[in-house]
Image (cartoon, rainbow, N blue to C red):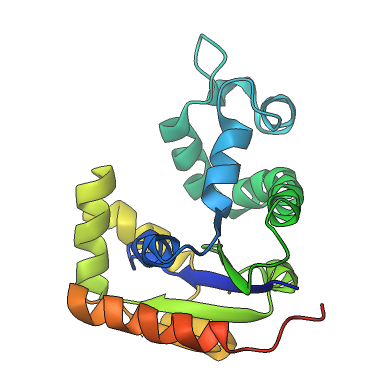
Length: 204
């Protein structure tokens, strides 16, 4: 049976970069954010319930989700975020389970990239090990600015709603520091790759 490793970390830590390193080694990678994006894309399964529970003001004239408006709405009130998560998280869970079932059981291990693994303990039940990606805060901010164009205050606001480094390390079985040293990052991934390959098959 495949051993599933939950890959997580704060915004801008470089989770996707690390996941890509594992994928380049032939390891199956499942991304929770990609599933969430599919659920909220035009005609996505989550849209009717989001409109019903969160309001039509979050949608554009063509019926697609206004993601900027949604982000502002979530940050405006913590109950808004909870309402949205109550809609999305069961669907994301289902999507992750379905994706796992599509992977050959002959695979020794696989990676599931789940950004909120520390914040949402229920998702930890999907994996047998947890790999946390760490990076300096200023570097994380720079990465998000380049990737998404968000200003620093918005990025820091997102960070305050996420688990801190200490909380993530509490749940970690393994840790990688992604500080921009690419050769070192590749070596760390390769080291864990060999380690995971040597683990006894999962019985879960």
